[in-house]
Image 1: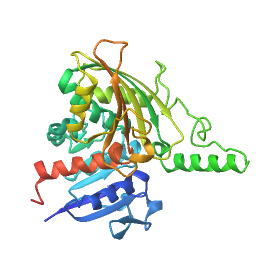
Image 2 (image 1 turned 60 degrees about the horizontal axis):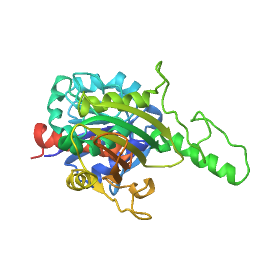
Image 3 (image 1 turned 45 degrees about the vertical axis):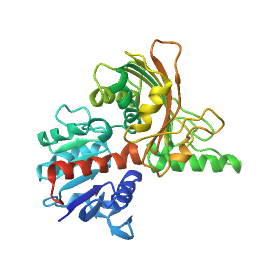
Image 4 (image 1 turned 60 degrees about the vertical axis):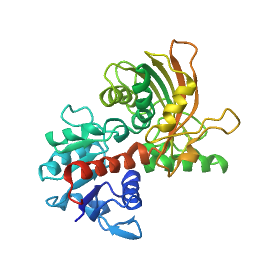
Length: 340
């Protein structure tokens, strides 16, 4: 007997990817229900070799539903998360709303899978920010080996991180430039086509943005509260795939070769690190893949025990949908055990 799974936000980029990955990985579900706002009711979304008709979240009864995968934003999570969990359905939420709640585990399965056990406090599990997820997958095995003390990260985040509207704006602006039309700006604060924007999410009083703050506090919660983290998050004219340049300072000595060998054996990591033209991974090559790719592993000579790495991943997959389904797989195998 399998699970009954609901996907909230099924018409969005991440929701559609959740349905794709549930089918790809043959998640043990007897029934999968696609949910969205009332305006999307009746829309069809693909699930494996069939289509699902979207149902309205407002009218759905979650009794008898085992797992709810939510990717509909913080306001929906605020309005519905606890209500769904109270009906006995475990909520795995992709928004930022529950991430820093001390009673809600914030999970990247390759890093802190054991913390899933704490879900029973509220029947809710949180997914981290997409940039945090891929970064901690790469940092965890290195932290275990040499203990990380400080991280400086610059991100190169694709427009899909801002949803379908962000991707559409990149496409429309690029087309407008080629045909000499006016470039319209609606989603982003500046032109994104042929440009980069050092601003993701709202600014805070200290000059950092909320996206940068998320990377700091989420890394501490997931990996180690003692790690010092500073981030600069940048939107780039890429459709899918986030990249990160990460400078890491360790308490213990670690060589580039040691790091390379450790990462090659680490879960979720795929090392492509040849010191030659094209011997590294770029965003376009990671699209549709599950792995977190790591390249350009080298010594940072400006600090003691320092390394620099380049990390790339499909943000709609590992940064969101895949991570949620990996959590659901562990939840089912270790705790719910309905489909054993």
